[in-house]
Amino acid sequence: MRARGPVLPVASPRQLSPSPPPAPYGKFGVSASVGLVPEAPDRPFPEGIELPEKDRPILQAAIAAAATHLVTGDITHVGPYIGRSVAGLQIQTPGDYLRQRDHLRR
Image 1 (cartoon, rainbow, N blue to C red):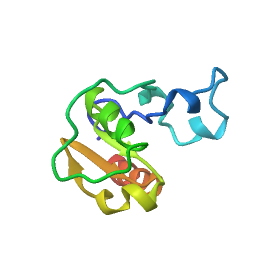
Image 2: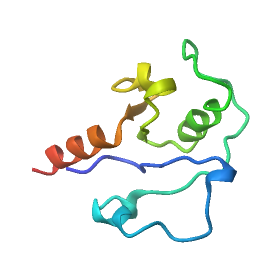
Image 3: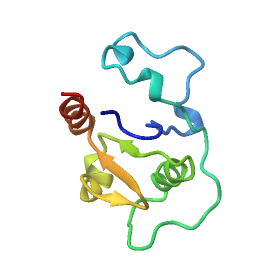
Image 4: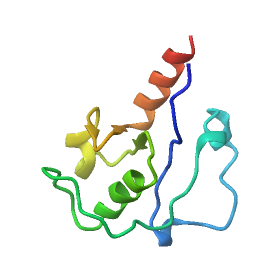
């Protein structure tokens, strides 16, 4: 069973690079279901979610793109929301996402 919908790593414009992703990226089999969202549209922020101003566009862009997952290693700021669903978006660490995906494939 595959996750439904796209899984989108969201990056700010300064994080985007015109070069292709490094080889290990495809090693985990997620490259076919991944897209980049260069900027977040101006929309209301989910109620009850507290993030620093610099991290808010990442969550907003993932929600606007109708992503099913936001995969992040930002434990400092996003940590309280890891393992939770925010506006229909499952927030997970990379390890949690890969473990869940591999478990669903069995």
